[in-house]
Image (cartoon, rainbow, N blue to C red; front, side, top):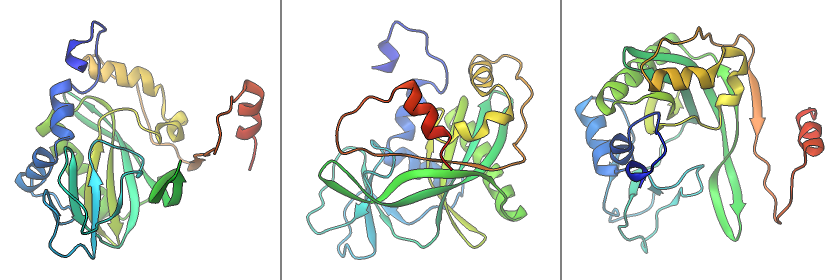
Length: 238
């Protein structure tokens, strides 16, 4: 439907977004580019223990759960072997001439609940930018460059990955400004950079913030309206 909208579209083209959200295309690309990722499959494993059931059609970790014998194939669904490690992400800017790595983030993924559904690995915030070993930083920059060229990414994007010591395993690319971009308010005019990168215009100057900051997602069990006063008060809480 994105391709049919009368509004002008900027960022990663709709066809590339469809390929990113197709598990077969995504994992084939990782294999062709020799990029590391957890063992993944499009059919449920014979023995579900040690496997996760995921979907490329969802976000925020709400779709991640332990695999079970009742799992069946569905559009966007795939199975991935569980691995130890810290959930991380890298915010980057993709443009026609290459990429700009803005910083790496530590994700807060822990048990939560959305409505009646328990979510063992629900995204609940992030801290960034954080420093990583040089070898890890180089590996992530290589992966981002390769994926940008392969899929034709444009604008602000984020790469999710697992970090285990100095080993990384790629999880997914979110080809849009993600929840972590507010951590980079001191990096420069990010939305102007997103537009410029999408339209192949000169980029404004950007830099990785020197001081990390954090954000957290607040969940409510009932509908409510956040006024400007409440918003400002929440921002002042330590």
